[in-house]
Length: 403
Image 1 (cartoon, rainbow, N blue to C red):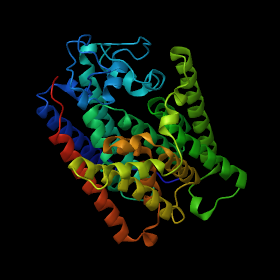
Image 2: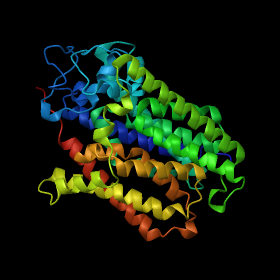
Image 3: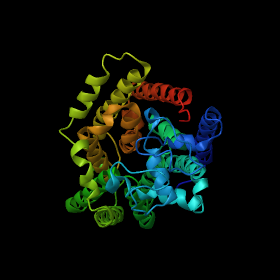
């Protein structure tokens, strides 16, 4: 197992941090340094008459999921119908996405007035840690740490920084777990996958794929050429980490039943899952032909998701990614193609595609240089960068006004 070095990793982490700081600073200037406007809390799920003085309410057209993480950060385990003026739309589902809320609560020292700032800080610090982990992971894949910057250009992170949601925290946990599995650190693999599941329930697909891949490796009792990075001990770590994440996921489901009377996974599953490709087809039908910049970005996000699926599938048989990483990619791709709800807008689809993007980067970077068509790779990265620029520009240009 190769020893990881710090060469270049610090630069990668610094660039991630600089982007996060510059992006958030620009957003704060646009909202008159009122961090609570990034929460995007507004009617009908936020009652202006019941909110705390530290929260600015925005018009209903600007509301987004950040208001739910704000409520969790104010009181992570409350089952009241309303907390600080905010109500959950799907209580069992929203109330069990605890990772981001608990971190925001801890960083705010339990002071509700500090929560809008703490949520911003959590994501900025998360981007910094993600940069370091991405650099180390690129190195573990046989690349220079600077290839970790390919994770920075995922447009979903630009949305997350602007709306106080949890994708960055989940990404840190996921990348940390993947790196730990490659580095032989079972404890951190368990911690990473468990935190990911407690932050975003969709990451259970990654944990399941890792477990399936590890079990397959142990059953075969041999190392295939494309999975030669896998070892017996790594497979055992994968099974333990996957199982621990599964237990955490089950515990969250039972917690949801106990607190809200509904299984969280079933609370919105019927409206968010369907036959593969039906969600994408419906999204294209709604946004095509595009008549506004927003619909152009919606179409671009759909194309980006399809690029991940097609590009990852093509690279899969050439890649030297571990069988656990490949298993995680396959399960995540199937899940992404089967969901229906997030295709209504670019922010939703690109946030939902975060895990698939991370795993696609891993699979592609693990392809030997001699078998990697540079033109295709450059074109794909160029398209991602273009959508990223459009996303950042859109988020900086359109910020919510106070109600």
